[in-house]
Amino acid sequence: MVLMERRTLTKCEQKSLLLSRAVVEKLDSEGVELALRKARDLCERWIEQNPCSDLFEWREVLKQPWAGVRQVLLDETEKGCQLRQSLPFCGVLSRPERWKLLKFHRNHDSFTA
Image (cartoon, rainbow, N blue to C red; front, side, top):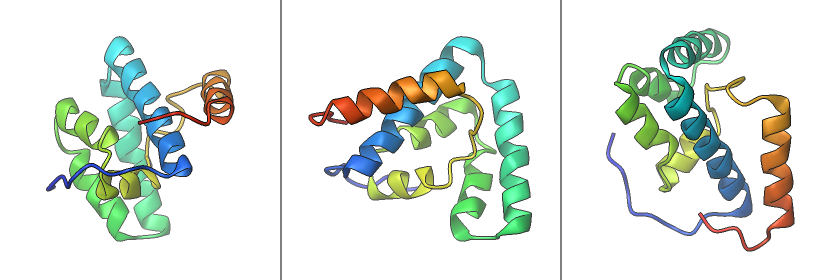
């Protein structure tokens, strides 16, 4: 995948990036193997239910070592933002972790990516 030039993110894209950063931080500290297996399985289930190009791209991304997957999760380009709309890492963050981040995002209008 070719990464494109960085751009200004919308509020929604900032929120998505904030959550992705938290996923990366958690997996960096707790280990990635189980989460990668779950993400691959989830991606395959989603492809069976609703095949689309982003999911096929995620399938390829998830074949890479963690460093490559991590790069995509943190990608601030238009392509990275697009892929985060179908992020197959559901369940990595607990509900309280997710709500804490969403509350932070809501309360910090000046959040910058």
